[in-house]
Image (cartoon, rainbow, N blue to C red; front, top):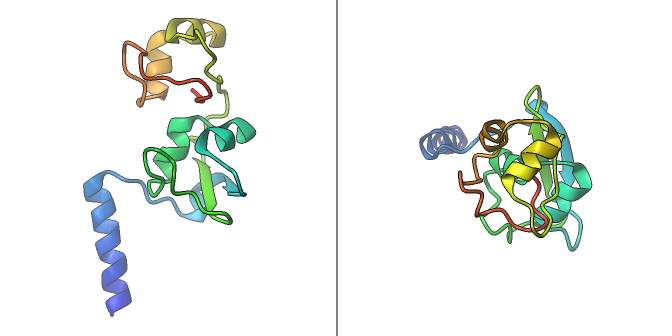
Length: 128
């Protein structure tokens, strides 16, 4: 009974906080953390947008400092997995990234809700 209550409490808390609980069956791909991994490194190795990694793994903190060796991460949700990505380089801006990808700025921003409309919060190595 206590285990059922704990699960129900965690599910309700996730819904209230806006986090996503992704079951392994819903994962399109997964990745097992190895020593020295960072979110940007994992995203670069796997072609996963930074926002997507953190969105489907709400237990990863904003600074991505709480990864553990052996931790299995979901890289994307079935039928919603984005693998067409760009690694941000020095001097990149959203307009140039969107043009290179053949999409509108609005589409780029819609697919990366972590990026502000002025595109001032992207960083080198981030996957968008």
